[in-house]
Length: 536
Image (tube, rainbow, N blue to C red):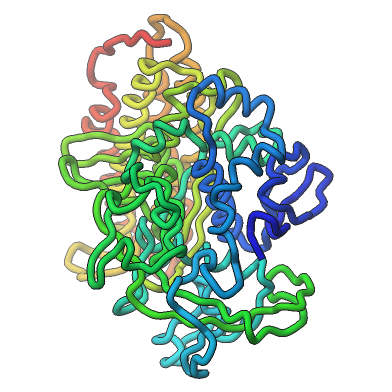
């Protein structure tokens, strides 16, 4: 089975029907979305397709990009692109296999060397969990057999998200459970337009990270040869040891699927009948140990100013508007730097499409070492930001940074007030106050996006109208949210027998004294004469 020739990718057509296609069919106009039953599979598949196109396309100019956006390449053209790499996508057989270790073999392996196929899934309980009989919510052996199509998706998903797994069990190029951010247009005509929006000109891509002179296929697709051809025993793999496209095809896990002992039946994920259900695989430690300044084009990065940046990973508080600025326009301050995914910056700078509403699709696993706590997925609106010039985007960036700083400060005061309403300063109380954060960010989200839309529209016109009304509106929104959350959602919602009226009144009065004080107004520049801005 070759993944370029096989119809293995689940998709949804415009009429709502599900179908399975080969990569050659990507440009069919009625394909509107990926349609796996698992969201992490959909996240992996879109990265597979973007990586496939970015690796193979000869497109190297904005004009050519526009031409193939308006008139997508034919199946024959895609066939010409994929032909040189065809052998890298063989999934079974005796030789090199897609995303599987070149040197491992299942023939003759002892039974104890095999792992159940369900353990390829990131949320599957690990060895420590099984030893402690702690698999309460996700049970062992829940997934017992997969069709080859779902197996291929599962192995790609684990390789690009690989979490820590103990000694010699290594993480992906972006670490365990990385965040991925993609630009999409609300009126995408097909899945092709979604993919093509996140592909950049060849020369620019090759200059991002890696060594373009490493042109042999095994430097792109590491399963085509022994690991030692890139990474010496006990060593590390840095970008300069591989081709730039390797960033899409990293292989930290040494895995080999057992295709010799298959059965018939329904796949435990897609429910399709297969006469070649896979039930087990072997794995060995010490795969590719990625180190150095890897820059994945689909991930934002963060760190302290002047230090090496690290890829973002979803956290327990999820994805929300507090991430809008960093993941879309970036943040650069004395102590902190957040760099959007390079494809996001590229799309904004190139102004590829002049009209239309765009958004940011963000997704990924929240991992606690090898434990998957949650899969997060959300979209953040860009409104008309793609139509603004650099000066306009800088204005938006500057103002949004004030809004977010003011929100952070308000939230810190609210948390302190809630704690003070429940406990005295003498009480040594420890606990998770994250529920207050969650309520606050959710309660203020719609107000934030309304202001952002207004702000982006303001950045369109060259006028001298004041930004002050927007700042004042956000100030009022924050005060209202803090008051309602304190009174109605947290303290006021508690059991009356557990309340201390005097302590609550004191906490409430201090909260609003602080909120109406100088600092919050200073953050929003409401205490200073406005310096008028001029932007497109």
